[in-house]
Image (cartoon, rainbow, N blue to C red; front, side, top):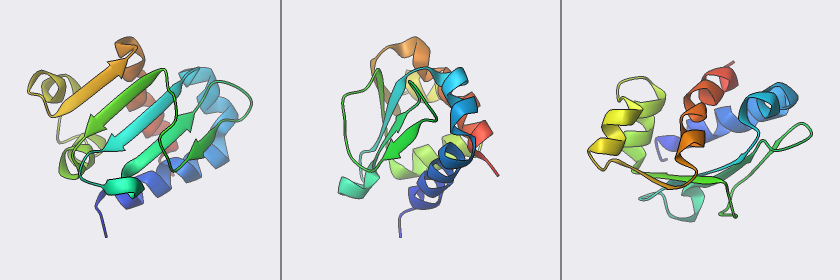
Length: 112
């Protein structure tokens, strides 16, 4: 089992439980891609309207964040700083980079 899998499940559960609240924080579509996770390593988090939704595939997004499995887990656990990850090439961004900064807050609010 991949290390990112429990985190994806936590994000999905968080959006189901607190979606409307997260839409107010996010207001965008976020695409996570775990580069060494295959098809299972793609999660689209739609926080644009309603109570939000998640989809386990790649979709058009306002910002796309691509990382390796171990780096994503380190970022989510606070062991890796997002800016350092970006500067060192461990985190790749496409789209609206300013939205990527909201992801940390969103991940925190997804925690049970």
